[in-house]
Length: 425
Ligand SMILES: Cc1ncc(COP(=O)(O)O)c(C=O)c1O
Image (cartoon, rainbow, N blue to C red; front, side, top):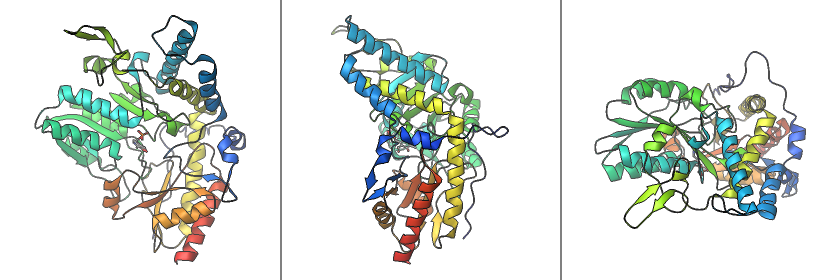
Protein backbone atom coordinates (compact mmCIF):
# COMPACT_ATOMS: atom_id res chain seq x y z
CA UNK A 1 0.00 0.00 0.00
CA UNK A 2 1.36 3.42 -0.82
CA UNK A 3 1.06 6.24 1.64
CA UNK A 4 1.45 9.69 0.22
CA UNK A 5 3.91 11.72 2.26
CA UNK A 6 2.89 15.21 3.24
CA UNK A 7 4.61 17.34 0.66
CA UNK A 8 3.50 20.91 1.11
CA UNK A 9 3.54 23.32 3.97
CA UNK A 10 0.18 24.74 5.03
CA UNK A 11 -0.79 28.05 3.54
CA UNK A 12 0.71 30.81 5.60
CA UNK A 13 3.92 28.90 6.24
CA UNK A 14 6.80 30.91 4.74
CA UNK A 15 8.60 28.86 2.10
CA UNK A 16 11.62 31.01 1.32
CA UNK A 17 13.18 31.91 4.66
CA UNK A 18 12.50 29.25 7.26
CA UNK A 19 10.78 30.56 10.38
CA UNK A 20 12.69 30.40 13.67
CA UNK A 21 12.62 26.99 15.34
CA UNK A 22 10.05 26.52 18.03
CA UNK A 23 11.58 25.99 21.47
CA UNK A 24 9.30 23.08 22.31
CA UNK A 25 11.07 22.20 25.57
CA UNK A 26 10.34 25.73 26.79
CA UNK A 27 6.75 25.58 25.48
CA UNK A 28 6.10 22.32 27.31
CA UNK A 29 6.99 23.94 30.62
CA UNK A 30 4.03 26.26 30.13
CA UNK A 31 1.51 23.38 30.15
CA UNK A 32 1.19 21.93 33.67
CA UNK A 33 -1.03 19.03 32.56
CA UNK A 34 1.82 17.58 30.49
CA UNK A 35 3.84 16.85 33.65
CA UNK A 36 1.43 14.07 34.57
CA UNK A 37 1.89 10.36 34.27
CA UNK A 38 -0.98 8.24 32.99
CA UNK A 39 -0.92 4.52 33.89
CA UNK A 40 2.61 5.19 35.16
CA UNK A 41 3.80 6.51 31.78
CA UNK A 42 4.49 10.13 30.82
CA UNK A 43 1.43 11.64 29.18
CA UNK A 44 1.69 11.88 25.40
CA UNK A 45 -1.19 14.08 24.38
CA UNK A 46 -2.16 13.62 20.73
CA UNK A 47 -5.85 14.53 20.91
CA UNK A 48 -5.49 18.21 20.12
CA UNK A 49 -8.15 18.26 17.43
CA UNK A 50 -10.71 17.36 20.12
CA UNK A 51 -9.40 19.96 22.53
CA UNK A 52 -6.00 21.46 23.27
CA UNK A 53 -4.34 21.86 26.66
CA UNK A 54 -4.08 25.24 28.37
CA UNK A 55 -0.88 27.12 29.16
CA UNK A 56 -0.35 28.46 32.68
CA UNK A 57 -0.91 32.02 31.49
CA UNK A 58 -4.49 31.17 30.42
CA UNK A 59 -5.17 29.39 33.71
CA UNK A 60 -3.77 32.40 35.61
CA UNK A 61 -5.82 34.97 33.71
CA UNK A 62 -9.08 33.06 34.27
CA UNK A 63 -8.23 32.53 37.93
CA UNK A 64 -7.30 36.19 38.39
CA UNK A 65 -10.56 37.31 36.80
CA UNK A 66 -12.65 35.35 39.31
CA UNK A 67 -10.37 36.27 42.21
CA UNK A 68 -10.03 39.99 41.64
CA UNK A 69 -12.45 41.40 39.09
CA UNK A 70 -15.47 39.11 38.79
CA UNK A 71 -18.40 41.27 37.81
CA UNK A 72 -20.94 41.53 35.01
CA UNK A 73 -20.06 43.50 31.88
CA UNK A 74 -21.68 46.48 30.16
CA UNK A 75 -24.04 47.22 33.02
CA UNK A 76 -22.32 48.60 36.06
CA UNK A 77 -20.83 51.93 36.98
CA UNK A 78 -18.74 50.40 39.74
CA UNK A 79 -15.03 49.76 39.34
CA UNK A 80 -15.21 45.97 39.03
CA UNK A 81 -17.80 46.08 36.29
CA UNK A 82 -15.87 48.69 34.37
CA UNK A 83 -12.65 46.68 34.66
CA UNK A 84 -14.40 43.47 33.55
CA UNK A 85 -15.96 45.33 30.60
CA UNK A 86 -12.60 46.82 29.65
CA UNK A 87 -10.90 43.42 29.66
CA UNK A 88 -13.80 41.78 27.83
CA UNK A 89 -13.76 44.39 25.08
CA UNK A 90 -9.94 44.34 24.94
CA UNK A 91 -10.15 40.61 24.19
CA UNK A 92 -12.50 41.41 21.31
CA UNK A 93 -9.83 43.67 19.84
CA UNK A 94 -7.27 40.86 20.27
CA UNK A 95 -9.53 38.56 18.24
CA UNK A 96 -10.00 41.29 15.64
CA UNK A 97 -6.20 41.55 15.25
CA UNK A 98 -5.75 37.78 15.30
CA UNK A 99 -8.14 37.37 12.36
CA UNK A 100 -7.25 40.73 10.82
CA UNK A 101 -10.91 41.73 10.80
CA UNK A 102 -11.58 45.29 9.68
CA UNK A 103 -13.57 46.21 12.80
CA UNK A 104 -13.98 44.92 16.36
CA UNK A 105 -17.77 45.02 16.01
CA UNK A 106 -17.48 42.23 13.44
CA UNK A 107 -16.36 39.87 16.24
CA UNK A 108 -19.25 38.12 18.00
CA UNK A 109 -18.56 35.99 21.05
CA UNK A 110 -20.39 32.66 20.96
CA UNK A 111 -20.03 29.34 22.80
CA UNK A 112 -17.94 27.79 20.05
CA UNK A 113 -17.89 26.85 16.39
CA UNK A 114 -21.14 24.94 16.75
CA UNK A 115 -22.96 27.99 18.02
CA UNK A 116 -21.30 30.22 15.40
CA UNK A 117 -22.69 28.05 12.59
CA UNK A 118 -26.12 27.75 14.23
CA UNK A 119 -26.24 31.52 14.60
CA UNK A 120 -25.69 32.01 10.88
CA UNK A 121 -28.08 29.19 9.94
CA UNK A 122 -30.83 30.56 12.13
CA UNK A 123 -30.33 34.29 11.62
CA UNK A 124 -28.99 34.65 8.07
CA UNK A 125 -30.89 31.52 7.04
CA UNK A 126 -34.20 32.71 8.45
CA UNK A 127 -33.85 36.00 6.59
CA UNK A 128 -32.53 34.80 3.25
CA UNK A 129 -33.41 31.17 2.57
CA UNK A 130 -36.72 30.26 0.91
CA UNK A 131 -38.34 27.09 -0.41
CA UNK A 132 -36.32 25.68 -3.29
CA UNK A 133 -33.13 27.57 -2.34
CA UNK A 134 -29.89 25.67 -1.87
CA UNK A 135 -27.07 25.57 0.67
CA UNK A 136 -23.73 24.08 -0.40
CA UNK A 137 -21.42 22.23 2.00
CA UNK A 138 -18.72 19.59 1.41
CA UNK A 139 -18.57 15.87 2.14
CA UNK A 140 -15.86 16.40 4.76
CA UNK A 141 -17.86 18.63 7.12
CA UNK A 142 -18.10 18.10 10.86
CA UNK A 143 -21.68 17.34 11.97
CA UNK A 144 -21.86 20.90 13.29
CA UNK A 145 -21.58 22.14 9.71
CA UNK A 146 -24.19 19.68 8.44
CA UNK A 147 -27.01 19.45 10.96
CA UNK A 148 -27.76 23.20 11.39
CA UNK A 149 -28.23 23.40 7.60
CA UNK A 150 -30.43 20.30 7.58
CA UNK A 151 -32.63 21.86 10.27
CA UNK A 152 -32.85 25.08 8.25
CA UNK A 153 -33.54 23.26 4.98
CA UNK A 154 -36.28 21.22 6.61
CA UNK A 155 -37.92 24.34 8.05
CA UNK A 156 -37.72 26.26 4.78
CA UNK A 157 -38.13 23.53 2.19
CA UNK A 158 -34.62 24.27 0.95
CA UNK A 159 -32.08 21.75 -0.37
CA UNK A 160 -28.65 20.79 0.97
CA UNK A 161 -26.05 20.18 -1.74
CA UNK A 162 -22.80 18.35 -0.98
CA UNK A 163 -19.47 18.77 -2.79
CA UNK A 164 -17.84 15.33 -3.12
CA UNK A 165 -14.26 14.59 -2.06
CA UNK A 166 -11.52 12.50 -3.70
CA UNK A 167 -9.94 9.28 -2.43
CA UNK A 168 -7.19 11.41 -0.91
CA UNK A 169 -9.82 13.42 0.93
CA UNK A 170 -9.51 16.53 -1.22
CA UNK A 171 -12.31 18.94 -2.10
CA UNK A 172 -13.37 18.38 -5.73
CA UNK A 173 -13.38 21.90 -7.08
CA UNK A 174 -14.87 21.06 -10.50
CA UNK A 175 -17.80 19.37 -8.78
CA UNK A 176 -18.23 22.42 -6.58
CA UNK A 177 -18.31 24.63 -9.65
CA UNK A 178 -21.15 22.51 -11.06
CA UNK A 179 -23.20 22.78 -7.87
CA UNK A 180 -23.33 26.58 -7.67
CA UNK A 181 -26.36 28.12 -9.34
CA UNK A 182 -28.85 30.98 -9.01
CA UNK A 183 -30.66 29.16 -6.18
CA UNK A 184 -27.52 28.84 -4.00
CA UNK A 185 -27.91 31.10 -0.95
CA UNK A 186 -24.78 30.21 1.00
CA UNK A 187 -21.64 28.06 0.84
CA UNK A 188 -20.37 26.69 4.16
CA UNK A 189 -17.05 24.81 4.18
CA UNK A 190 -14.44 23.64 6.60
CA UNK A 191 -11.00 25.26 6.39
CA UNK A 192 -9.06 22.32 7.86
CA UNK A 193 -10.80 18.96 8.19
CA UNK A 194 -10.74 17.41 11.67
CA UNK A 195 -11.15 13.87 10.33
CA UNK A 196 -8.72 14.03 7.37
CA UNK A 197 -6.37 16.94 8.00
CA UNK A 198 -7.13 18.35 4.55
CA UNK A 199 -6.58 22.09 4.12
CA UNK A 200 -9.23 23.31 1.73
CA UNK A 201 -8.56 25.97 -0.92
CA UNK A 202 -10.93 28.36 0.81
CA UNK A 203 -9.64 31.46 -0.97
CA UNK A 204 -10.53 29.89 -4.34
CA UNK A 205 -13.83 28.53 -3.02
CA UNK A 206 -14.79 32.02 -1.82
CA UNK A 207 -13.68 33.71 -5.03
CA UNK A 208 -15.88 31.47 -7.14
CA UNK A 209 -18.91 31.86 -4.85
CA UNK A 210 -18.48 35.64 -4.83
CA UNK A 211 -18.38 35.75 -8.61
CA UNK A 212 -21.99 34.55 -8.33
CA UNK A 213 -22.83 36.81 -5.36
CA UNK A 214 -23.01 33.91 -2.94
CA UNK A 215 -21.70 34.49 0.60
CA UNK A 216 -19.38 31.96 2.25
CA UNK A 217 -19.03 30.76 5.83
CA UNK A 218 -15.74 29.11 6.80
CA UNK A 219 -15.59 26.64 9.69
CA UNK A 220 -12.18 27.47 11.15
CA UNK A 221 -12.36 25.24 14.25
CA UNK A 222 -9.26 23.26 13.28
CA UNK A 223 -7.54 25.89 11.18
CA UNK A 224 -6.87 28.68 13.67
CA UNK A 225 -4.37 26.76 15.84
CA UNK A 226 -2.35 25.74 12.76
CA UNK A 227 -2.67 28.38 10.04
CA UNK A 228 -2.43 32.15 9.92
CA UNK A 229 -5.95 33.31 9.10
CA UNK A 230 -6.64 36.70 7.56
CA UNK A 231 -10.36 37.15 7.02
CA UNK A 232 -9.89 40.23 4.85
CA UNK A 233 -7.46 38.43 2.59
CA UNK A 234 -9.74 35.39 2.40
CA UNK A 235 -12.67 37.77 1.89
CA UNK A 236 -14.93 35.26 3.69
CA UNK A 237 -18.31 36.53 4.84
CA UNK A 238 -18.34 34.52 8.07
CA UNK A 239 -15.53 32.73 9.91
CA UNK A 240 -16.04 30.80 13.11
CA UNK A 241 -13.81 28.98 15.62
CA UNK A 242 -13.70 27.62 19.18
CA UNK A 243 -11.38 28.86 21.91
CA UNK A 244 -10.71 25.45 23.43
CA UNK A 245 -8.91 24.07 20.37
CA UNK A 246 -6.63 27.09 20.42
CA UNK A 247 -5.27 26.64 23.97
CA UNK A 248 -8.09 28.77 25.42
CA UNK A 249 -11.00 27.90 27.72
CA UNK A 250 -13.97 25.73 26.79
CA UNK A 251 -17.38 27.32 26.26
CA UNK A 252 -16.12 30.29 24.29
CA UNK A 253 -15.75 30.86 20.57
CA UNK A 254 -15.95 33.47 17.89
CA UNK A 255 -18.11 34.27 14.93
CA UNK A 256 -16.61 36.82 12.57
CA UNK A 257 -19.05 38.34 10.08
CA UNK A 258 -18.76 41.22 7.65
CA UNK A 259 -20.44 44.21 9.27
CA UNK A 260 -22.86 44.79 6.38
CA UNK A 261 -24.19 41.24 6.57
CA UNK A 262 -24.43 41.20 10.37
CA UNK A 263 -26.23 44.55 10.37
CA UNK A 264 -28.88 43.19 8.05
CA UNK A 265 -29.40 39.95 9.97
CA UNK A 266 -32.12 39.51 12.61
CA UNK A 267 -31.02 38.68 16.18
CA UNK A 268 -30.27 35.04 16.96
CA UNK A 269 -31.43 35.05 20.57
CA UNK A 270 -33.40 37.60 22.58
CA UNK A 271 -32.56 38.81 26.08
CA UNK A 272 -30.48 41.25 28.05
CA UNK A 273 -27.70 43.30 26.42
CA UNK A 274 -28.90 42.72 22.85
CA UNK A 275 -31.60 45.39 23.06
CA UNK A 276 -31.58 49.14 22.74
CA UNK A 277 -35.06 49.66 24.22
CA UNK A 278 -37.94 47.39 25.21
CA UNK A 279 -41.64 48.07 25.53
CA UNK A 280 -44.41 45.51 25.31
CA UNK A 281 -45.32 47.01 21.95
CA UNK A 282 -41.89 47.15 20.37
CA UNK A 283 -38.26 46.28 21.02
CA UNK A 284 -35.36 47.86 19.20
CA UNK A 285 -32.04 46.09 19.03
CA UNK A 286 -28.57 47.06 20.17
CA UNK A 287 -25.77 47.84 17.73
CA UNK A 288 -23.14 45.28 16.66
CA UNK A 289 -21.70 43.20 18.18
CA UNK A 290 -24.10 43.30 21.14
CA UNK A 291 -27.15 42.53 19.00
CA UNK A 292 -25.84 38.96 18.82
CA UNK A 293 -24.67 38.59 22.42
CA UNK A 294 -27.86 38.07 24.42
CA UNK A 295 -27.50 37.52 28.16
CA UNK A 296 -24.47 37.40 30.40
CA UNK A 297 -21.58 36.15 28.29
CA UNK A 298 -18.74 33.82 29.29
CA UNK A 299 -16.65 36.75 30.53
CA UNK A 300 -13.82 34.69 32.05
CA UNK A 301 -13.75 32.60 28.88
CA UNK A 302 -13.42 35.65 26.67
CA UNK A 303 -10.58 37.04 28.76
CA UNK A 304 -8.91 33.60 28.81
CA UNK A 305 -9.27 33.38 25.04
CA UNK A 306 -7.51 36.74 24.74
CA UNK A 307 -4.61 35.33 26.78
CA UNK A 308 -4.48 32.22 24.56
CA UNK A 309 -4.30 34.39 21.44
CA UNK A 310 -1.46 36.40 23.00
CA UNK A 311 0.33 33.15 23.79
CA UNK A 312 -0.01 31.70 20.29
CA UNK A 313 0.87 35.00 18.65
CA UNK A 314 4.03 35.28 20.78
CA UNK A 315 5.04 31.73 19.74
CA UNK A 316 4.44 32.75 16.11
CA UNK A 317 1.88 30.86 14.04
CA UNK A 318 4.32 30.42 11.16
CA UNK A 319 6.84 28.89 13.55
CA UNK A 320 4.18 26.63 15.07
CA UNK A 321 2.92 25.60 11.61
CA UNK A 322 6.43 24.69 10.45
CA UNK A 323 7.05 22.66 13.62
CA UNK A 324 3.78 20.75 13.29
CA UNK A 325 4.38 20.19 9.60
CA UNK A 326 7.72 18.54 10.33
CA UNK A 327 6.10 16.35 12.97
CA UNK A 328 3.29 15.34 10.64
CA UNK A 329 5.81 14.42 7.97
CA UNK A 330 7.87 12.47 10.51
CA UNK A 331 4.76 10.62 11.74
CA UNK A 332 3.51 9.92 8.21
CA UNK A 333 6.84 8.36 7.29
CA UNK A 334 7.13 6.43 10.56
CA UNK A 335 3.76 4.67 10.19
CA UNK A 336 4.66 3.47 6.68
CA UNK A 337 6.62 0.64 8.34
CA UNK A 338 3.51 -0.74 10.03
CA UNK A 339 2.05 -3.35 7.73
CA UNK A 340 -1.73 -3.23 7.47
CA UNK A 341 -2.00 0.41 8.54
CA UNK A 342 -3.93 2.62 6.12
CA UNK A 343 -4.00 6.38 6.36
CA UNK A 344 -7.40 7.99 5.90
CA UNK A 345 -6.72 11.43 4.46
CA UNK A 346 -3.66 11.90 2.26
CA UNK A 347 -4.35 15.36 0.85
CA UNK A 348 -1.45 17.25 -0.70
CA UNK A 349 -2.21 20.19 1.57
CA UNK A 350 -2.61 18.83 5.03
CA UNK A 351 -1.99 19.78 8.66
CA UNK A 352 -2.27 18.55 12.19
CA UNK A 353 -4.10 15.25 11.75
CA UNK A 354 -2.94 11.66 11.22
CA UNK A 355 -6.01 9.41 10.89
CA UNK A 356 -5.73 5.72 10.12
CA UNK A 357 -7.17 2.24 10.36
CA UNK A 358 -5.32 -1.04 10.93
CA UNK A 359 -6.08 -4.53 9.66
CA UNK A 360 -7.68 -6.73 12.33
CA UNK A 361 -7.68 -4.06 15.04
CA UNK A 362 -10.74 -1.93 15.73
CA UNK A 363 -9.87 1.75 16.32
CA UNK A 364 -11.34 1.42 19.81
CA UNK A 365 -8.81 -1.32 20.63
CA UNK A 366 -6.01 0.80 19.20
CA UNK A 367 -7.08 3.69 21.44
CA UNK A 368 -7.21 1.47 24.53
CA UNK A 369 -3.81 -0.08 23.97
CA UNK A 370 -2.24 3.31 23.36
CA UNK A 371 -3.91 4.64 26.49
CA UNK A 372 -2.11 1.98 28.53
CA UNK A 373 1.11 3.46 27.13
CA UNK A 374 0.09 6.95 28.24
CA UNK A 375 -0.68 7.98 24.65
CA UNK A 376 -3.99 9.85 24.24
CA UNK A 377 -5.51 9.70 20.76
CA UNK A 378 -9.15 9.75 19.64
CA UNK A 379 -11.07 6.94 18.03
CA UNK A 380 -14.51 6.93 16.46
CA UNK A 381 -16.21 8.87 13.70
CA UNK A 382 -14.95 12.26 14.94
CA UNK A 383 -18.42 13.78 14.32
CA UNK A 384 -17.89 13.11 10.60
CA UNK A 385 -20.01 10.03 9.87
CA UNK A 386 -20.30 10.91 6.15
CA UNK A 387 -16.48 10.87 5.92
CA UNK A 388 -16.41 7.38 7.46
CA UNK A 389 -19.03 6.25 4.92
CA UNK A 390 -17.01 7.79 2.08
CA UNK A 391 -13.93 5.76 3.05
CA UNK A 392 -15.91 2.63 3.93
CA UNK A 393 -14.78 2.48 7.55
CA UNK A 394 -16.90 2.57 10.74
CA UNK A 395 -14.33 4.64 12.57
CA UNK A 396 -10.68 5.71 12.52
CA UNK A 397 -7.91 6.22 15.04
CA UNK A 398 -6.72 9.82 14.98
CA UNK A 399 -3.57 11.38 16.37
CA UNK A 400 -3.70 15.16 16.20
CA UNK A 401 -0.86 17.56 16.84
CA UNK A 402 -0.38 20.65 18.93
CA UNK A 403 2.28 23.21 19.74
CA UNK A 404 3.87 21.09 22.52
CA UNK A 405 4.23 17.80 20.63
CA UNK A 406 7.66 16.37 19.94
CA UNK A 407 9.30 13.65 17.87
CA UNK A 408 9.45 11.64 21.11
CA UNK A 409 5.64 11.81 21.25
CA UNK A 410 5.46 10.42 17.73
CA UNK A 411 7.98 7.70 18.66
CA UNK A 412 5.75 6.72 21.60
CA UNK A 413 2.73 6.60 19.29
CA UNK A 414 4.55 4.43 16.76
CA UNK A 415 5.91 2.10 19.47
CA UNK A 416 2.33 1.71 20.75
CA UNK A 417 1.09 0.92 17.25
CA UNK A 418 3.73 -1.79 16.91
CA UNK A 419 2.32 -3.29 20.13
CA UNK A 420 -1.17 -3.19 18.59
CA UNK A 421 0.24 -4.94 15.53
CA UNK A 422 1.80 -7.67 17.68
CA UNK A 423 -1.44 -8.23 19.58
CA UNK A 424 -3.81 -8.16 16.61
CA UNK A 425 -1.47 -9.42 13.89
C1 LIG B 1 -13.96 21.07 11.91
C2 LIG B 1 -14.79 21.25 13.14
N1 LIG B 1 -15.89 22.00 13.10
C3 LIG B 1 -16.65 22.20 14.17
C4 LIG B 1 -16.35 21.63 15.37
C5 LIG B 1 -17.23 21.90 16.56
O1 LIG B 1 -16.52 22.60 17.52
P1 LIG B 1 -17.15 22.86 18.97
O2 LIG B 1 -17.56 21.52 19.49
O3 LIG B 1 -16.02 23.46 19.73
O4 LIG B 1 -18.29 23.78 18.78
C6 LIG B 1 -15.23 20.82 15.49
C7 LIG B 1 -14.90 20.14 16.75
O5 LIG B 1 -14.24 19.13 16.78
C8 LIG B 1 -14.41 20.64 14.34
O6 LIG B 1 -13.32 19.89 14.39
